[in-house]
Length: 401
Image 1 (cartoon, helix red, strand yellow):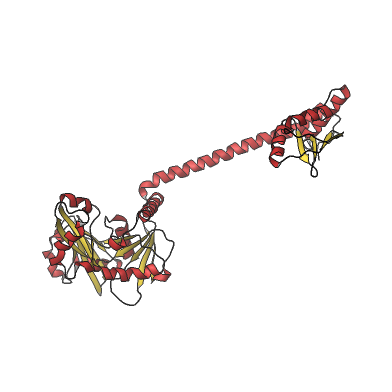
Image 2 (image 1 turned 60 degrees about the horizontal axis):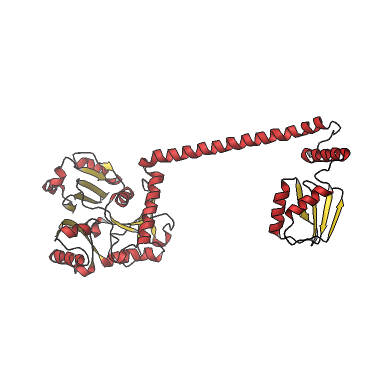
C-alpha cells in the first residue's frame, strides 16, 4: 500500500508529497518526494486529505431524498452554512448514508474545495499514479480522541469526537470549555516531537503516533471514501482495491496468522512427503537395477561382462531358442507378425529384407502420428520401428543400435 498525504496548502508550484509504504499493518518506509519520484508499483494507492482541508457538517436527511435528488437536497441543507457556492465544493457522504436517505435521519457530510482537490491530484495523475481511495486524515468518532500534532514551534491540537472534528485554540486555558476533553474515555495521540509537551499539558500520558502511522490508521480503519463524484472509482477499480486489501490482510494481519502457519506447515509436510516418496521409489528402482546383473550372471554363468543386462538377457534367451529350434521374438516370423499388427490400412510394403534379427521394410510411408502409435504398440513386445531414409523402415529389438 502506498499512502500519499495531500498537501495542506494551495500552491501553484508542484508540491512535494509526504508518503508512506505499508503492508496494511505497519509502516515500512516513509519519505517525501515530488510526484514523479513516488513508487509506481507499491500496491493500492491511497490519498490522505489533511484535516485542515475538510469541514464537517451534521445534517438531517429528509425521508425519500435518495437517488438523483440527494445532491440537490445536500446543497439546500448546507447553503446557509457554507461560505462558497456548493457547486464549487466536493460534498461527501459516508457509504451508509445513501441507504439512510430512504428513511431519513442525521448524517455527517465532509466538505472540501473541488479546485484544491484537482490541483493536488493532477501531479499524481501526470506521474502515472491512480489514487484508488481518498480518505480523511481525521474524521468524527464516537470515542473522543485528541491528536497533538507538529512541533513545539508549530503545534496544533485536533479533537475528534461525536460532535465533529475540532481544532482546539492555542490557549490551553480555554480547553476546559470542551466537554469531550473531560470524558474518561478520552484517548491522546501525540507525534514524537510533542510527546513531552503533551505530558505536561494533559492529565494522562499520550500514545506515541507519528504522522505516517496516523495516515495508515486513516487508510485502514476509516469508513469514509472521498473518491466520489468526478473521482468515483469504477467496478474494476473497486474489485482491484478489494483484492489488494484482502491479499495484504491475508499476508500480514494478526488474525490470519494461524492460517498462514497452517498453510506453510501443510506445504512443508507435502514437500517432505513427496521427497520421501520419490526417494523410496528411486531406492527401489536402484535396487532392481543392482539385481539385474546378478540375475543375468546366475542364469547365464558364461556371461562375465555386464554392460546392458536387459538387452544381454534378451540375446541369450534368443540364442537358446535358436538352439532348441524355437522362434525368438526377433526372428523373421514374429517380426512379420508384429509388423502386421501396426501396419496402417492400405499400406503394402514393396520389399522385405531380414538379416541379423533386423527386418528392413521398403515402400512404406508413415506419418509422425502413425509412427508414434506403432511404437507404442511394439514397445510392449520389446520392439522398435525406426525410419531409415524416405520410405525405408527398420523393425528390431529395442536397444539395438
